[in-house]
Image (cartoon, rainbow, N blue to C red; front, side, top):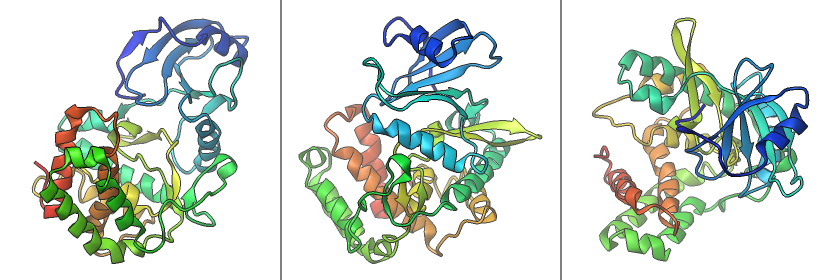
Length: 324
């Protein structure tokens, strides 16, 4: 279901007890921990009476994200391919973090598919991913902001006037960012984001469903009817109400104009699915994605091994070139 490597589970919560509460009539054949989840632990489990495996996911860092994800799955199911949730414990039980049991999504992650280096496969999947994103963006809320339990909308993530530019400014003031970015690049980022501030301000009132982690590892694809298409969009815990260009920018983060991989198929799929894009959508989406790249650099626990990659992405963005 993810890019995970599976290992036999030797430690952690009482998996057998949880599975017995969820499905008392089904014995446990196996449970293996799935590595690759950066925040929440996940297990691949096999139960008697179920042909395919299930995924058991815990919400340890943000327990409220469990109810949020359950609500979002219910909202989009039938229109957006998401794993079916068979059981959910949205509150802590006997010291066990909130958790869900989901059906296994068949296929590969889009990251895995790209690693096969087959242009036809990638083009088919990219078109389907664009259509899927348009369907996600078709859901509209009363206002922009964080999504909570019950699909309630909280405070806006950014101020309506210069919110994006001010957010990047706050990232640039972070001691971690200043340690990781040389002064010349800091000034280049500042100049770049303020150049785009007026256009980004126009996005502040958009209130569409944004997945917010719309990238290769969270997009499952499978071959159906002779074509590669999205079989599941997973990990919705960071979703919010805002501009769909956030997801577009994330999806295009590693795209290079000189060596196109997902274009023009991704944008064609997005438009075919009912999405809309401004004339300068690629450059604007890149400016929007700069917020996420800068936020990464503020994290004290960020692995230093990925800092050079982030710095190169930021530098390439501000210089209007393809990343190396």
